[in-house]
Length: 227
Image 1 (cartoon, rainbow, N blue to C red):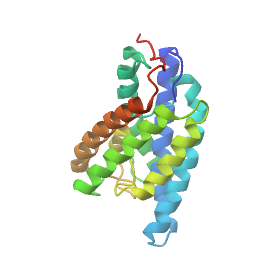
Image 2: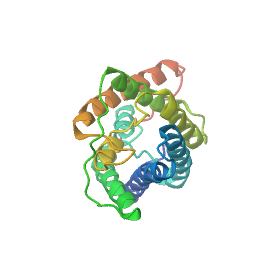
Image 3: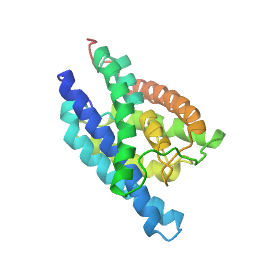
Image 4: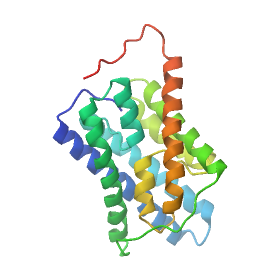
């Protein structure tokens, strides 16, 4: 997930394409799954999970060498705080990720001949959902920060696939995903009123995951230098 400091323009293009395609995969597979599942929510979620796992793995492999394949403001902010991503990159990544997530929702709608502009009506709120998002995001950061070299793409994809099922929120674990899915009144959507609680929980979870990774890292491990 982490890469040397890339040229910012290329990195932003990689983050934009990766985030857009990730949201198109999540939302598009949700639309397809709902249409084909005959009302069976478990089957729809299973199909949505499989597409997301496969798509996420490929996107990390393709864009990781260019931008770090973060596609996630919570990840970018933690990487900045750790000194693993220059501040200028992180502050540019976040708005690009948010805008690309919305574009991904529109792309999914276009592929299924649906109205591009939508607002989700699906409420996802309550203490259990917020705890689930904190747990999902903490686990994601822990996996990213502790994954052995060369294994992050498979481990992140597998973790997200598992978290679809063991968390009450189906593991958004990503503020950009919450914003993008807010713009889709489909299987994967989230109502605007539910987004602030999700984002706050994700940011808390990201800090917890970072702290856990730090606690598990041997004291003699070098810390990335800040730029």
